[in-house]
Image (tube, rainbow, N blue to C red):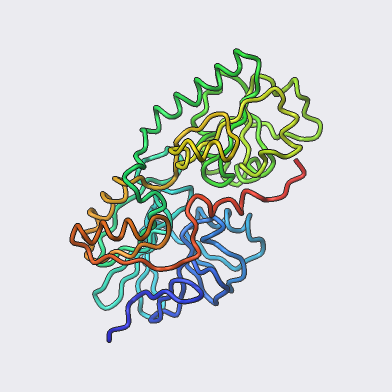
Length: 340
């Protein structure tokens, strides 16, 4: 029986021909990393390869590591296997990993989205024979509103809270979502304050992207300074003593899970904005079609439902167990400790 070009084992996605792993979840000698979220870039590998714009991100998160960066569409060979990285549109520096060997082409998406968010390099379809895809939101119920409308809603919410004399506290993942929110907030309304974890991560990108001015919240920040302005914070800050400084405040969360009202209630959030850094149902299906692939492997999310639908459409589709966690997998990096 022919050995597959990429195989799933206890450490991650393994390319035996090159003796290299893609986004491994256990320590390995050589790892190609799709992006900087905690479930995809883990500590402990001897050597990391990733897109050059992701290098400062994983260095910030993982510390002193041996890492090399490559450009988009730059071919590099390992033991005769050809690799290249292509924009995934998920967050800054996120890549799809293309693997070619003996006329066979596989693409591993990591996490991805097809809407251009104005921050990450937009997703590009890559032709392949086998497509390894997430399906975090692989249900027909998930259908994203265009980003422009969502940000109009967010800025209107901020303005209304300011009119009522309240501070707006907006929760989003410190890596990716926070920078997307920051890029599109209307600074004519007021000042943007940040939790330390978000400020630290945003500082990593300041030389790459033109973000609005932000003010880090410290122990010296007074409650009156915050009133009527907006605060960006990771979800892990909700319910902590840190947030008491914001009183009177109104909370909101930006996530694909806000599609479901129950998710907002469980998190005790006043307002939910449906804004995801992953594909919705149609985005997934369109992406798969554009690759021209015959085989699809679903790695995380609604894998069983989504793969069954793909088989009904004529694809050779199956699922594989991984330790990737979609939007919940970003929570770990949001728990970065900061002195406020």
